[in-house]
Figure 1 (tube, rainbow, N blue to C red):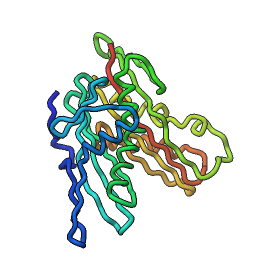
Figure 2 (figure 1 turned 135 degrees about the horizontal axis):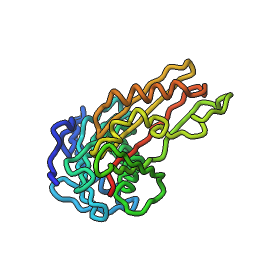
Figure 3 (figure 1 turned 45 degrees about the vertical axis):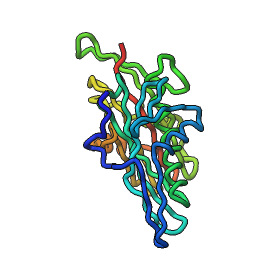
Length: 253
C-alpha cells in the first residue's frame, strides 16, 4: 500500500493546536485520540508515523483535521477526515468526513470518532471478513464481463428518525434501507470493477421537501443525490424524517 495523504483529501495535519484569548494554548494528537476510541471498543492498533494499523483486518488509518471552530465558550464544532487504506479492498486509499459538536474541543473530536466507529468502521470490518457478521450482505453476478463479475455489498444499519408515524403504512417505512431502494441509481457502480464505500443520506420534511447527500469513497456523487432524493419523495408523510446509511461494495471470487 502507498501510505500517503491523498491529494483530494482537504484535511491537513494530525495535531491540532488551539490558541485561546487568554494567551493559553491546547494541543490534540488526533491519531492518539482515535486510537483510544478504537481501544475502548476492543480494537487495538499500532501507531507508526501518524498512521494507525489494525493488524487483524489489514486496515491502515490516517486521521487529519479540517477545522475546529470555537463557536462560544461551550459550543465547539469540528470536522476531521479519516483516510482508509487496505491492501486488497482500498490499496490506493479513500477518505471519509467526520462532523461533530461538543462542549469542548476534546468532546467534539471524540464524538466524531465514536460516530465514525459506530457507522463506518464496523461496516468496513464486515467488508473484509470471510464470515458474515451482524450486517446484511447482498451478492450479485453480472455477465457483461468474462469471467462474470461477482460483487458483494455490506449493508450498514440505517440510522433513521421520523417525527410521527405515517398515517399510511407503506413499504418505505417497513424497510428503511436506502441502498436497496436505490439499486438502479447505483447500477453503474455495481457493474464497475472497482471497490466503493458509499455514504447515503436522505430527508423529507412535513411539506414534502427533500434533501440528499451521496459520497462515494469520500467524494460527492451528484447522480446518487438525485436518485436518493427521488426515492425520498415517495415516502409517506411522517413529518420531518431522515435516514442515513454506509455501504461497501467489493469484488469477490
